[in-house]
Image (cartoon, rainbow, N blue to C red; front, side):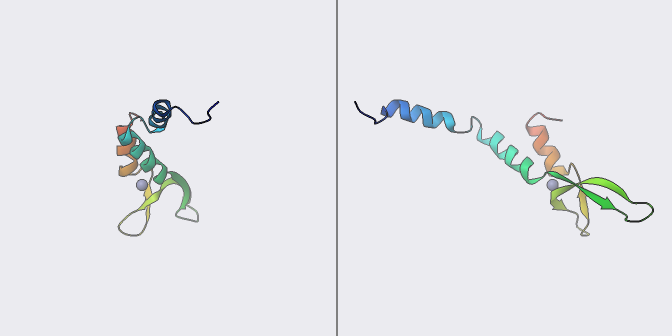
Length: 81
Ligand SMILES: [Zn+2]
């Protein structure tokens, strides 16, 4: 009895393991880069916790509020709100 996989079956199995949609896989990867994290804004009397993006910052060196524009686009591309 052979332990070698049937070649056609092997190839089909391999193909089935590929992401069905490379674009979708890329968008999911972008979402993972642009996760939210809670940050303390204005420490002191007016402090508050806000969600900021782990993947972005603003031009002036501050946190980018989450969801950031990049994350919003990825969400839209995946049909998620
Ligand atoms: Zn971001």
